[in-house]
Image (cartoon, rainbow, N blue to C red; front, side):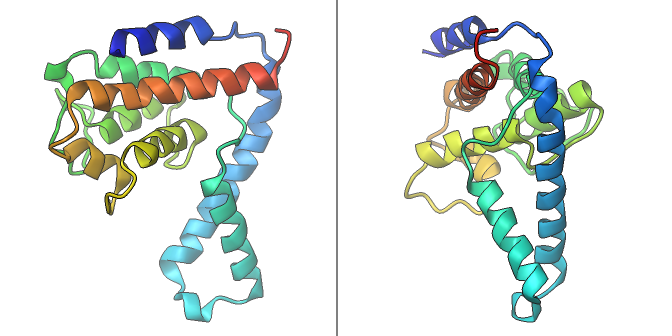
Length: 187
């Protein structure tokens, strides 16, 4: 199953024509809203939120739950790099602690995406669409399980094997590739 998902993802990869570049500003704007919202969430008690902060939190939560956020080639590149990082079972760290280092020799789902984000874009954006899509795949797969940290807990779940861990990224890549093709029809 893993091989077929990866093969499908590669077939669906759109040619890089530059169409997606028009979405970079939308992506940056959404990430800025999310970052501001998460800052409020982590620093201001909810009971003390003013009207502006409540509106920001509503917008932030709406964005985080949206399964139709814009994507770009960068999202595909991040997912491709994460798949190459998790190239085999020996490269998988099934005991994730969300502590990632460039010197690691095995990576959890989270750390593979973290490392891939830095390698591809020069920085890490926790709520970038590519990473959110992996979270959605994991959320759908783990319905009914109470995970405090979706990626970490799914990665560490005894029921998750290497193929399931890696295919969560491969499936997200398919979703992102399809969305990118829809954003840039006819190309």
